[in-house]
Image 1 (spheres, one colour):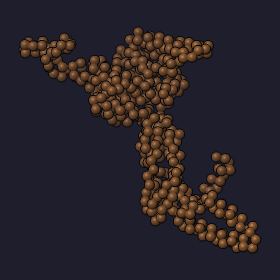
Image 2 (spheres, rainbow, N blue to C red; image 1 turned 180 degrees about the horizontal axis):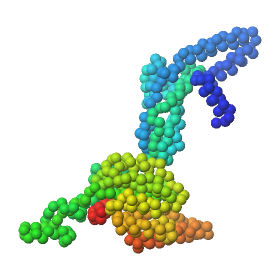
Image 3 (cartoon, rainbow, N blue to C red; image 1 turned 90 degrees about the horizontal axis):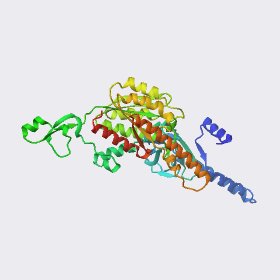
Image 4 (cartoon, rainbow, N blue to C red; image 1 turned 45 degrees about the horizontal axis):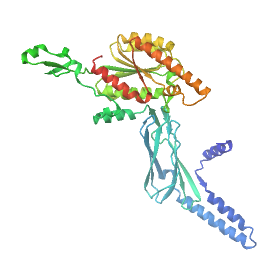
Length: 453
């Protein structure tokens, strides 16, 4: 917007102008001005034309609805998943006794991708119109929605009126980590089709640590679970059944530092980690466990105490909706200190992070090894798919070879760092961002099935 346009807008707001002539009026005035060039009859025709134009303008003005004759309602979910699409619905209702031709204007914030069409539509007398807009979460955070405006045109298209509707609800949209995977896992679980996304079934009976009952021994059962007293009583081998112990604690520790700023598939690695953490928390909460979260970089960014049920998932979404990765080194000492003070009892700790060299892994291994003596610890190391791809040369030339060699060296250093973790007894899950949610859920189910909690 130029300085002249800004000045004009401020002047209009100051004097309260809402009605403006259209280009059609300018065309009519130009045509009438040419009539003055006609000798004798030209002046008469011009005057008659001016009178007719004034009458048309008066008619258009009378037929334009006022601000109180139109209402706008904006309906959209107050939360939107990153990369998810929702329908933004506008309902424009008219109490005007005549048909109204209108256009809708609403500029969405940068964190919500979508365009409100400015195509003209008609509202029937005392009727209503629904306009639907596809809105996509483009960036996490709380994004404030502005005022909406309607441009109404008179029946002769000589005058227009702009009606600005302020404080249209809702006032904001919170873009949270994607909930698509959460809903997908829930649906597949209801349909008993989790195997479609690579999730192995959790055997609720037979491998846990809480006694569930007795049954006849079948080949493949662990001999340790044979109940010899029941076997002697029944005259055949009897095995003990166990069930998975419930109401345990699962805490996601999420690194928001330098390694999580890299982009994978259009979103930062932190966004992928937050989405996987939400899926894990939803599965764990559905299984009866309590779920919590610790987010950190060079400082503690968010802490959610372990909770049960759907309330836990809402608390997690609220806490992580505003998290952004920063180019700083993560302070593992502070993160593990908070873990030690907030969760003294044994729990499953899933750490979403990545390391790129042995030096960066050294301090992390020290703290993780100490925490692993008390908790069941799983480190989710997020693969850098673009780095792995760059390590494989696809073109000929010195530049391509140098680039490939540099990438290969980084990949090798990372593998050495992960090997150092494994040799220290830290369970490492090295996985691509696109497969992270499934891999994390599988590891959680495996830990539950083996009774490691």
